[in-house]
Amino acid sequence: MRRLRLTGIGDGLRLLARRRRGTENHGLPASIRQARAPFVRGTRLFTLTNHGGSPLRGRTQYLRTQTDRLGFLAPLAGYLRFSLVEFDGRADSVTRVASAVAPGHNASSV
Image (tube, rainbow, N blue to C red; front, side, top):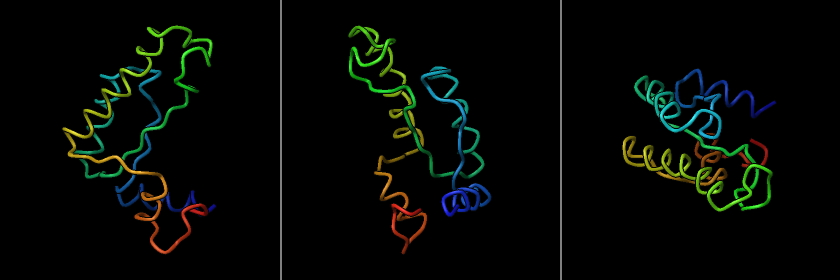
């Protein structure tokens, strides 16, 4: 419950916005377009998660070859490059982000 509250507060303060699309489903251009709008409105905390399973070749039915794997990773790498360069972003761990959003709380309970 606390996690939902913090997400809602962060979203209301425009510090945190959740995108419902990912590069694995909609491609890099659409992901970049969707990231720009909340950034222009002041959002400064973005997360990138992979819901597509393991990126190791052969671990999933759609990543059977090295070509499949590179095709899967390229949009993720492109999005990271975009956010680090255009947004002057930085990569960080979930624990450190949680500590920054909710100082004084145990990151595992946030």
